[in-house]
Length: 122
Length: 158
Picture 1: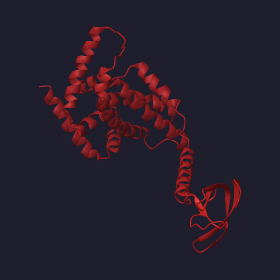
Picture 2 (picture 1 turned 180 degrees about the horizontal axis):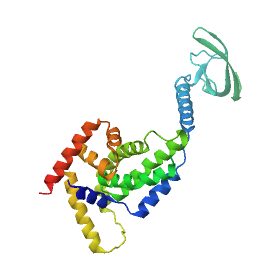
Picture 3 (picture 1 turned 135 degrees about the vertical axis):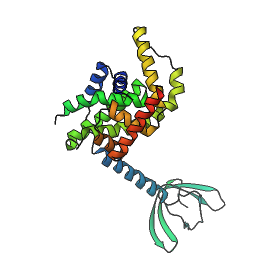
Picture 4 (picture 1 turned 180 degrees about the vertical axis):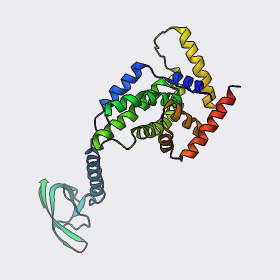
């Protein structure tokens, strides 16, 4: 490749003045990147992971209505908080309880103090 | 070293290099602009790099690779899109295009490594030391690539 060919190559690729000005203006207007952005993303990621772990480790909810006898004692192996439906024996009497609070745990057995919100305790 | 003067000096050289690499004025401008922006941000945050030209061209080289892949992927879509291009004098434009086409075909026949070398040194006006730094090779290896590229371009004109 001769020298004039290299000059031709340069000339052929020469940008227009307006292009150069545009690029220079855009480059000089560049703002520094946000150095705290990384830390913010890390915090969001940690919070999300914590949320997922908390959700995965939560205790299973009461899914079955709890059968109880006239004596008023309920034995179950699950524990949770929130509302619970109580069904009395075979009579079909249903009570809705809210605010089950764990009173004590002995081995795998847990006892709860529950508040009846609908219906009357037997 | 003055930032604005450096940017003004590098801008046309970068644009030439990017046009040679990409052959698309839009992509070339995007790549040149982003490389210069990276230089400006780096300069303001930590001071000037040892070699602003090598720094900027290294970034432009990497981004040009990505842009080339992107252009190749989206080329079928962009040719379908309707474009309003400004009407200009057709004769000089045709001449320029024909010259550009001749150079393009000659350059396209070169292996990528040799094309990179010739574009950095001729279009980008980088010194041998800087171009070697950008390509991550020794100066003698770069000189060899340049010799081979010039030889092939010379042969392609026959």
